[in-house]
Amino acid sequence: MSYKIKLEIFEGPFDLLLFLIRKNEVDIYDIPIHEITEQFLEYIELMKILDLEIAGEFIEMVALLMNIKARMLLPKPVGISDEDYEDPRTELVERLIEYKRFKDAAAEISVFESNRRKLFSRKSFEKYFVKNEISTEEYLNDVSLFDLLLALKKALDNMPKITEHQVTRIDVTIEQQTDYILNKFTATSAILFSELIKQMKEKIVIIVTFMALLDLINKKQLTVKQSENFDDIRINLIK
Picture 1: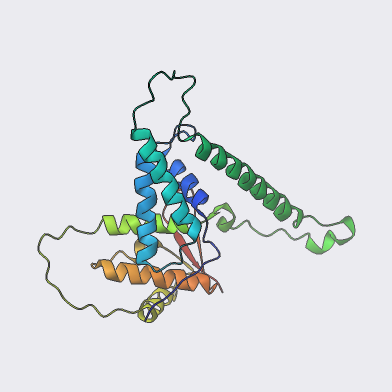
Picture 2: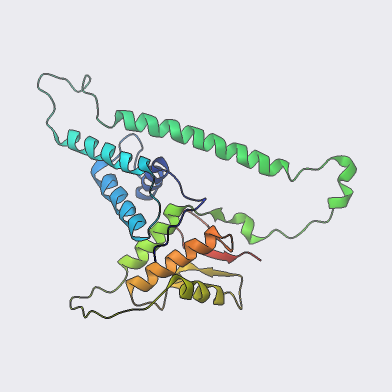
């Protein structure tokens, strides 16, 4: 059976590029196109393995990155000075910066909206005078699909390298791993992704568990957060 998963946290190719730039801590004006292209393709492959719906703009971005990569390998035209030479990355960088500008503006507006909801007029102030203790949840950031994919990639990369492989059938389903995940919340309301897959020895089990996790997020039974960029993923049960 094929499981197509489409999430609200699913983001576009420019989000992935910005994610990789932050992850690699590189200058947005001097993108190491070879390294970023290779990593971009790795994430595309992970999406294919997970049977995620990949929008056409991702494929278009791959073509653009490959084109830029090929142009940068070509020797500089004879007779053109460094000042007159146009960097093949220029157009992409300009589009990326413009996208980031609008994305940051949207995030600021969202914060203003969230803060405004916490304000009440004087006549209704007494009703909300009781101050609740601040939950640690307020200090956690939302997790994007690419943060989740990074956690999966780390888990798969940390699997022991097997030089001799014996083919065996491993029967594992999304339904089984869904129950496995939900059962982890019998005594707690939050678990770490690293703890969730800690005892798993086969890649296929980790992948199916990850798909079950995405499905539960999509069904709004779980939320995922992290305390800082690229930190361990905290999975919370929605009660």
